[in-house]
Length: 209
View 1 (cartoon, helix red, strand yellow):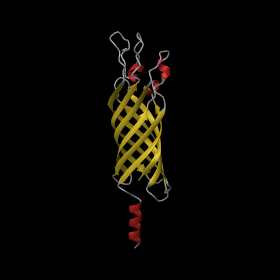
View 2: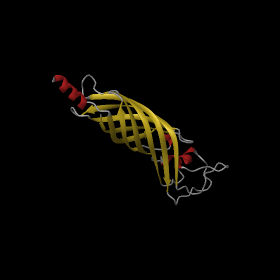
View 3: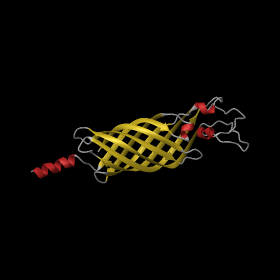
C-alpha cells in the first residue's frame, strides 16, 4: 500500500511534457545596442522531459528592437518598427528542488532561426547626399557605389539568419503542483547580414513541469 502511494506521488510530481510562457524586457548588446534600445519580449515553448533533469524544448520568441534615433541625428529619422522573431530548439538541464526547497535552477542553450523584420513609413525618402553608415543597413537601406544611401523608399525588409543562445534561470514551485514561476536571462546571437543581432532578454513567466 505504501509502495502504491509512493508511486502515485512520484507520478504526480513528474511528467514527460513541459511547456512555458512568459514575457519581459530585452536589452540589446553591441553591435545591436549601437542602433536599438530596450523593448519588450514574449516567449512560449513546448518540450519533452528526457528525465527529471534533462529536457529538449522548442521555443518561439518575439522581441521589439526600437531604433536609437540619436545615432542618425541630425538627419530626420524615418518612422518604422523593427522586430525580431525566432524559432529555436534548446537543451535544458535543471535542478528541480534545491535541498528539498521549492526553489530550482536551470541552464539551457540551443540555436535555430532568427528573422529581423523592418517596416518603414512608405512616404519616407532618405535626403540626398547622406553618407552611408552602418545604421542605415540596420534600417534596411543600402548604399550606392559612391558611398551614399539610396534615396528610394524602403517599405519593408526582412533578414533571416541562424543563431545561438544560452542562459540561466530560476524557478519557484507552487506547492506540490507541476506549475512553477520562472525568471531567466538568456544571451542571443544571430548571424544577421552586415550587423549581427545580439541581445539579452530577461523573461518572467509560468512553466509546467
